[in-house]
Image (tube, rainbow, N blue to C red; front, side, top):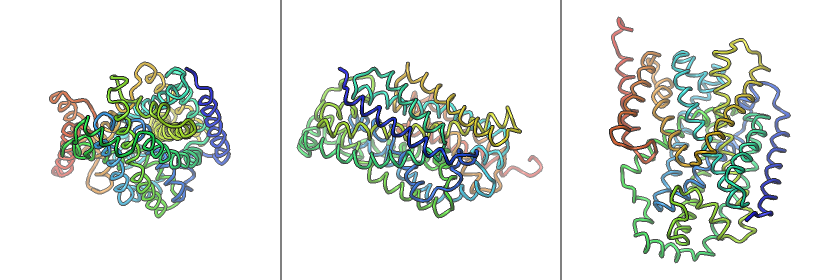
Length: 471
């Protein structure tokens, strides 16, 4: 059944975000404005754009569905992101900002080429393009589920419409317009999600509902430790590390006005994410008390949208609708930022048009956004999965990028041969471990990713320390 009020809210909110993005884009005149916001983000604006990106489909729709399936242990998804962002704020973030400022880097690919050469840049960025398309697909699918649940229109319509909104406001002004739009989105999320949790708890009976769920599902369902030490280590290793080395987050940090703004902004984002982490988990567990038997066995993407539609009072539900859409749009534009800037710099400028001028590079970033988003939408329509794409991206990111990025920053002796060999070793061992264990890529699967990282680090050390005569 079509919900006219929800459709009106979605259209009006989408127009507001597009309008804010177009208004902000008036300050985007150069490629540097588009790629790194003119390096003028203060702590507050940096915190807002990073936190808005991190409160996305994975930490809302995805985590609520995961909590519905496995219980309180789902907190390790967002908890690992909190730990990773904290490490980023205290170590890699400020250090990478200094490097980007001194070497005039606009992307992580720029840094990899300056530090290790073009071959490593091309290989790593190729892997990340593939992963970025998958994660962007996941964000857009989450928008589709929300739109479908609230409005009654088909999933494909939500996917296309959500993708269109992101494309317009991001392509207009890149990082700068996204950061300004993210402030609006974050404000909506930080108000609506707590209100939605309180309303759901009141309707469903709060602690009594949790007690009933524990009786039905077992006491371990309410334990954050139910997935065991290896499961927790898997989330922290894969997800936590991915938030330390994510090109999207690092390139947002490149836009900070100074090193202090990087550290303060990322720390503020860490605090905000930690405070938010338990809300989707609690909502997923409460949903289990209402639906002891899943409505769909294919995936749990329906849980949070359906909960907001069926359980919450209409007014709260519409507010939560705007919040959930905000979450998905903000994380989608963050991934699109990473994908489009990399495609424009790492492919177009490097291989196609090395002598491109500033206006041409700005135009290339916008065209790359159209190409990247179109590819993600085309994949999302026949394969609507949320955590599947996220899990694949985070695993690919960590396996391919962790050793070269960390070695480049903290070990001056590491060279191009060592890092190329490390990537080859990491990917080979990871794929062999996946085949041997029969597991699929994902944060909960520790051993394939960990073995890949260990293999890459070991090979990097061996090749770096090889005798000088063989270098």
